[in-house]
Image 1 (tube, rainbow, N blue to C red):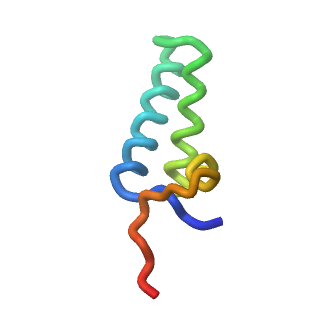
Image 2: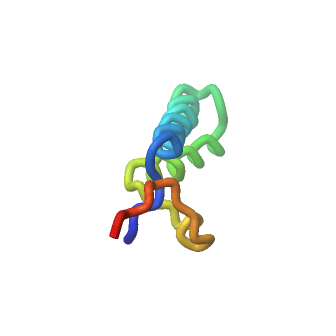
Length: 64
């Protein structure tokens, strides 16, 4: 599994995921807020399956 989520993209994924999960736990939004688990986990593990499918990445290129 190659890392493909880094930098500001990673920070935003974690922040947005925490906001959605927090709002769901507080009862401010409905059960659909659990979708925040997806960006949270992709940010934590630095891997996004959708990025892998489309060949995208936000990590700097490795020097060979």
